[in-house]
Length: 157
Image (tube, rainbow, N blue to C red; front, side, top):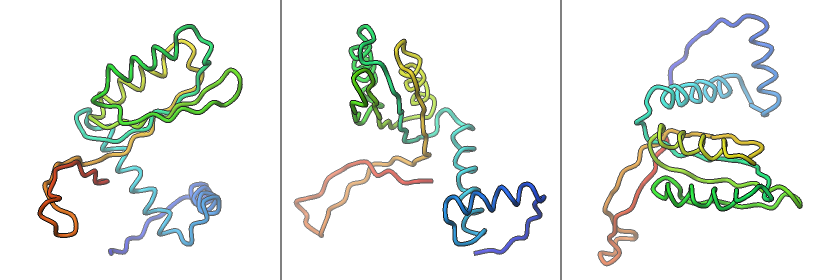
């Protein structure tokens, strides 16, 4: 690890201390490392629509909205290459929340999430992106030759 010194004005230092207290950081170094890491991840996602990512599209919608559930299902089918899974939760008599896990290029994932969130009847929506490196490897588990197989490995940047 390398040591560095930074200078922060009083207002920014107070905000950092509040951030640390809210999230129960043990020291400033840990808090600053996490903030720098998050900033660098966001920079990667903002810099290239072709970068690989994982995403979670989270949205709340009126399940009584005309054909909305059908439109959302069709959108997922139309983007089956991006959509890994969807969790559906009944919030009350009128509202449902879905969390759709996505994997693909940043531009494609954003486009799909924006389309879903913009649907008439969707009340709230947010997309969380995490940069990822997706690769395919062939290997075996436990040394057994019969269990050799290929699958995706997702590594956080």
